[in-house]
Structure formats: C-alpha cells, structure tokens
Amino acid sequence: MVLPLDQQEARLSETRAYLEDALATIPEIAVIAGTGLGDVVPPEAHLQTIPYTSIPHFPVSTVESHSGDLVRCRIGKRDVLLFRGRFHLYEGYTPADVGFPVRALAALGVQGLIITNAAGGLNPGFRAGDIMMLSDHINMTGANPLTGPHSPQWGDRFPDMSRVYSEQLRNGVRAAAARLGIALHEGVYVGVTGPCLETPAETRMFRLLGADAIGMSTVQEAIAAVQGGLNVLGFSVITNVNNPDDMQETTLDQVIGAAAAAAPRLCALVEAAVTDWPEAGRHVC
Ligand code: HPA
Image (cartoon, rainbow, N blue to C red; front, side, top):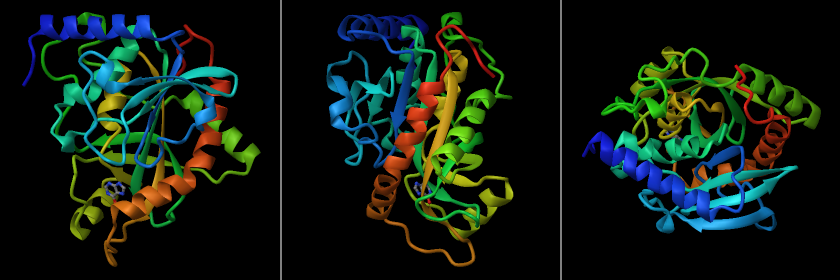
C-alpha cells in the first residue's frame, strides 16, 4: 500500500528523531550487510546495538540468514552504522519499504553508504568466493523506491543515475585492494526480485544485457541513496557462478558459506574504503 505523503513524512521524522536520540553519535558512513555478511564487523568492534523491532516504522527482516539490528561499530578509525539485516522485495515489502532505512540515513545526515550483497556470477571469468565492486547496476526488478508521492526534502524527483557508484571512492578501493593483495573484480550488478533463481535462458539474457553479477537486493537501496545525496559504494561476494550452458544447482547453504568465507577480505576492503572516505560535507563523484 502506498501511504499518503504526509504519513510518509511523519514516519520518517519519527524514525529520524528516535535514532538521533538513541544513537550516542551519528556516524558519517553506513554499511548494509548482505546475506552471510552480517558478521563482517567482529563483535568486539560493536559499540551499540539497536534491534530493528525497537526502531519506529522500520520493516522487520523475515529472512533467517539476516538478523535484524542496527549496530554502531568501529571500523578502522571511524564509527560506522552497520545494518545487520536488510529488506527485500521478495519478502513482500514495497519498494518504498526497502528504501526506507536509506531514506532514514539521509534524514540523519549520513553521507556515505557501502552496500554489500551475495550474488551469482554471470561473468565466466568469476569464481565462487570472488569479490566484485559495483561499477554500475541494472534495475530489472520492475520496481523503484521513488515511485509514489514525493517530498522535495528527500532530494530530486528525477535523480540523475549517471554516476551511482562513486568513481573517486572506487579508485581508492582499487588501490587499497592492490596494496592488500586482495583480488577485486569490477562490474555491473543486475538486480532482480527473486526469490527463485534464474533459468539458463534468463542467465544468458542477463549476461547479454551486460551484467557481471546477479542478485535480489541493492538496486532499490542504491536508488534511494542517490536521491538522498549519499556517496555510494557497492560490493558483491560471488557465491556461485551461473553458466547458462552448464547450469548447476545453487543452494542457500552454498550462498551463505561462500559469503562467510569471503567476509574477512570484504571486511578489509570496507575498512580501507571507510578509512579513505572524505570528511563530511564533501560530495565526491
Ligand atoms: N541469482 C540471484 N541471486 C543470487 C544468486 C544467483 O545466482 N546467488 C546469490 N544470490
């Protein structure tokens, strides 16, 4: 159901007010943890945990592989807000629900967002366990979090999408990956609704469309973040590689296992990104 504008604005300001009050400090950067990546920041670095159930108007994650709490944590020398658990269209949430936490971040004044996900590889050069930094995305969900009533407080009605994933931040991560000896691909992520996986014919089509990895998240959050003026980085952990001519079965256990195995490398890249992130108020492109 699409809520009228005044109700949407009221909800967002209640969520913002709650988080402003609850959080000891408001970090400048947030990270959304994908499937199997909730432990990307070790528990000893957690400073404060707020269950989603206590945040007004927050959707509640229904997926077992995602817990549901917002953690203020220390990554390198900076405080970061970590979303452990995210919302997917396949759970039945509306696009606006999926984008809501990101809109809340923008309302809080958070200026950067790192989106992570578990994804299927479409690029035949990829292997399970590889990490891909997003250079761009294709939204094939047929849904958009910006549809419905619009408030100018949220940003532009028609946000430009020519540079979703900051070039400057990506340059920094690429250099850090080389320094740390972490293999890093870069490519295009295609977002679908799921929850079923793709057929061989669909897999062939998405590869033909120019996608390197496929998953069921990220695009709604990235769109909401662009509208809110956040600088965005995205990372996919490739949990399986889909070859349309020799399609193998993919299981949730496989996805969670491969994502968890890549978590330490992803954590090192996220730490490098956070460390290099420009100070507040500077928009990068
Ligand atoms: N397809 C879609 N989503 C996914 C996949 C996949 O192969 N692997 C992990 N998430």
